[in-house]
Image 1 (tube, rainbow, N blue to C red):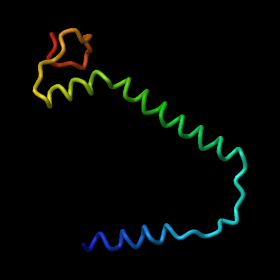
Image 2 (image 1 turned 120 degrees about the vertical axis):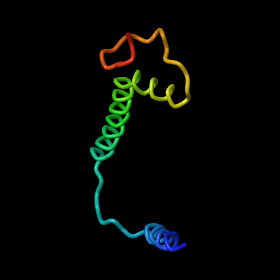
Image 3 (image 1 turned 180 degrees about the vertical axis):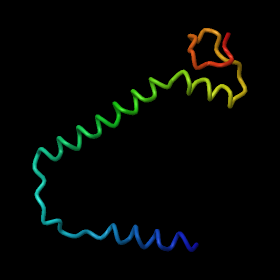
Image 4 (image 1 turned 30 degrees about the vertical axis):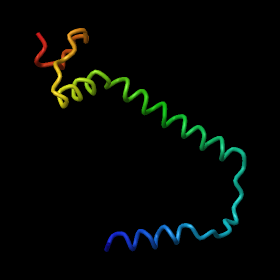
Length: 80
């Protein structure tokens, strides 16, 4: 309860609309769109580079055996 009350007040304060007195030109929307695209590209490349490690970790959490068709990687200590 002690944490919820300040959060409610903060949310209510953020919902009060005030004039911005600013101009957003078309380049601002383009910059925002470019940032969103870059974020998705970064996330997808990061996941694709680490996919084998992520898959191996999730399989170990679930208690399943490693995939025998997975390519060998030098960082695999238990693979022979």
